[in-house]
Length: 296
Image 1 (spheres, rainbow, N blue to C red):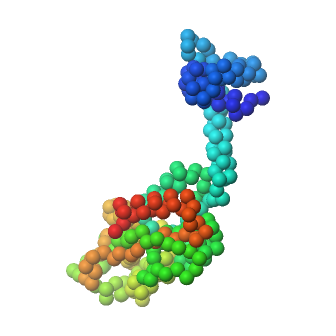
Image 2 (cartoon, rainbow, N blue to C red):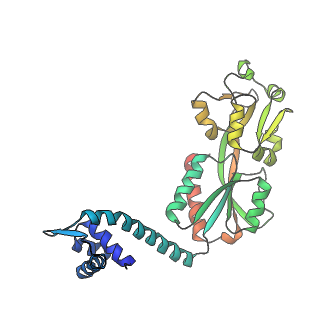
Image 3 (cartoon, rainbow, N blue to C red):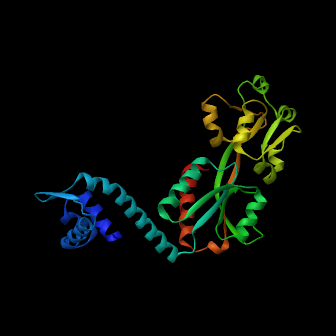
């Protein structure tokens, strides 16, 4: 039989090309490395290396064994790291809730940070309505959220938050929509045309997003944008719609009553039980760094 130590010595020798260099890499004696490889060769009656001067060159059989051995060694190392980290921390996963306003690039940025800094933590990115999200944050230690903030952001339950900044939104429709033919589009014109509204936007700030009496409430971003390419108009994040504008599938409408783009705040929400944890500290620093570079 073989152990992790046998396979680690074998893989290091293949990669370094000598027993001595493998010993340095693993911080072991050269004799130990050679004995472990010899034990493998004797146990399975196979030659894993050919000695060419000071070099240990893997044989054809050694190369074939290496591919499987490396996989086992890598998995063993990851398991060891996970077990050690699990011993040090109680966090094994985070459910990160988000709404339509959160830029995809922010999600990618945070995903990459957590994967690198805490590889043992599983991350689930989930889309829910605001009330459900707040309830989860108050009752589950692994629940986090990035979503638009309310006009007054004063928590009444067991959670805390930080404001990240604002994202810009505009009015969008398909390039051939009748609204694009108007010399000047007004709020009154929008009130008469079909409007698609993100469920997140509507239930967070209906006074801002509910404009038309002919509205369609949509909970899924992809569905909303697909419908928007055929009919209606919607208020959406510029960063979300940009690829569709560049592809000529959607266009922004300048509105008479809106001198600038609409700006809505983003906040990061977390349970009070996470305070002072290294995981939360790292996530907050990463989000603040992103916000300084990309949000206003």
